[in-house]
Image 1 (tube, rainbow, N blue to C red):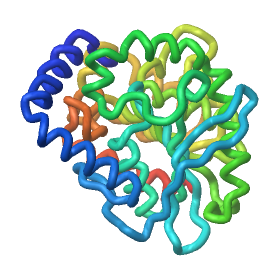
Image 2: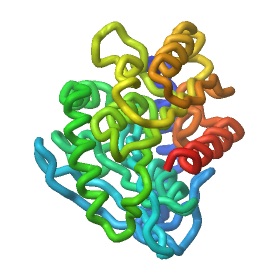
Image 3: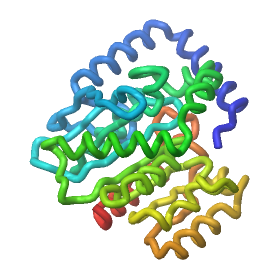
Image 4: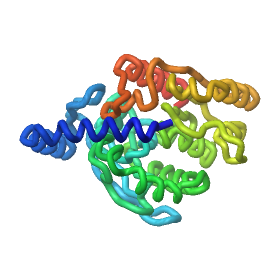
Length: 294
């Protein structure tokens, strides 16, 4: 899980260094804004294809209007993927990640789980969140119990299945990072006839005591899974991977459950824990899951 005090120290140092180079920072922010508008990317591990079509979208849910970013290529209908971001929400880093998955042949919807409280980009990067965003994030996360995510997934899938870019004859994938990790299991549980793959990267709260713990819901879904566990998370809760394996086996599901050589957040390029070799392995394993299940 996120180490709040450690991340706040890192964020203050990074933001201080950013202020010291103010002119360079202004140029970088402008570049990011231009890249987002043009659908290009400069972050490590991101897509650079100009063939992608990306646009902001919104649609009705039971609880309001969800905003999202939709990325698809021009080569015809493709399997859909729901991208649940980490605790810092939609921002350039996750836009780039969603674009890269789309460039690999998928129609990707990067959703805003915080839409009940705020629209669009809330924090421009992870450092901005880590410096001052914890309190606001906790307040918004209080509105995101498992049942809310399941309701949202039903609306998300209904919207995706209306898009020409989506191949509705193929299953839908769900990928999630940090707090979004368990949302992938909730997605598969909410719409088992459509969500056929769930990939959790350094997901928090996958094994809990309550009845809505993700590992207790696997038998009621119909998906293949990738549980990519951070090495420091595993050190804090070494029994979780065994509980996941036991639940997967009892449910008769296929799953890759692995501790990766990266600390919590290692897959996200603007995270202080970003570890490119492990992130590249995670990306490859995710595509292998989608190829098998979708």
